[in-house]
Length: 119
Image (cartoon, rainbow, N blue to C red; front, side, top):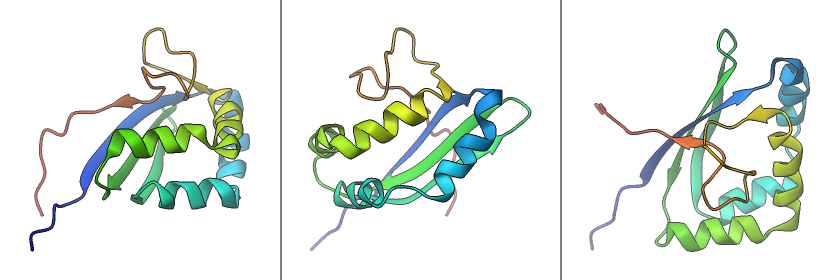
């Protein structure tokens, strides 16, 4: 039996400078329903980093499920997740042209291309 390694995902978005403390505060107490949905959608090893100089947030995660699009649709369908995104989106500035928020099919965070990795 062969197992597929997790899909590695990296994304960026900008944080509004005046939202810095509020963003840190809400992420210090992420809603349990949001954490449960992340796990239920096969997202593991999820971290968000901040470069305060450029106010860029960098997210790194692994997806270990079998149908990424279906899992992301399940994530978008969760009302608590949608409320969380509405709150956090208001603290951010997307780099995705024309995006209206995290529920937009275009996305809100910009996915990054992996150009190098060593394990």
